Length: 370
Image: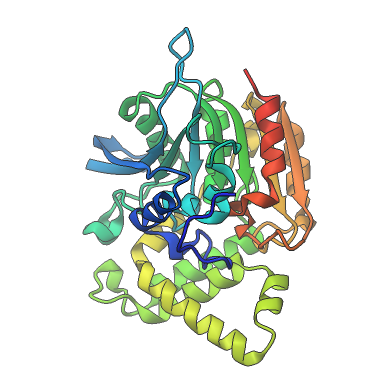
């Protein structure tokens, strides 16, 4: 199994693995291992993009990285493109960690990058793409998930010349995007693998913790309507604590931090790293983008093969809700898998530990073969 040198063996911090948010460093580690080449990076610039809110951004930058090159069939349709969609506050770099890239991207592995054209996109508001912290702060357009999916589609078609996808793997926020992809562009993709989400509006506990973070940012006097000169510390303390709880596995935390002292130190370390790698307005916008998400009325439109996977130790998507089992019945070619709690699951973040679910990816690729 390919393991990039320099990566930590323990579970990274945060919903979207914030310790690995620097694409160039992660790519360099992968290259050092001699198994997977460094990805190609680029920026696609869109002029005068119109958001659903009615706002217009004169220049919008989408950053991406890719492995391999597109292959086309006799009809000119791209046959080997795979789109990977990251989670809230993350970037495409989350897929370069050893527990994902090392399990899937190497020679002979399921997403062998010598066979597949693998595309990692930094969504608007994230990574190296246009985001509020670039300068506009709270004057940045209020994007939502529909805007994000429309931008991903434009990047593929107009920026990269990709007219068809073999597969979309979406994690957390990207999981939700994958449902929207299947409904909005039903003929564009052969297979969808949503990991760690629900295909219904965000409500209940999932909405509460998000609202707590958003309210903390807006209500912090240091935020100053987005015109702050330093990160609003009280708000970011709340955000760090909520992300740590939401992303974590109770069983794993108990094993790793069995004493009060160990737990307090882990919380302090997490908070320090979280605040150093996040911006309050970027975080506010990323969380607020889910405000009108609801694919449930149109799930019947999805024609792609769907392998929907959640884990039983996911704080954000707990199995007792029964939502996944109910909603997957609306999907013509859909299957839902609930991973039982084990040493291979890591709470919400199981979505990026490919060893826990790669057997289902294998089944999906086989069953959706054109």
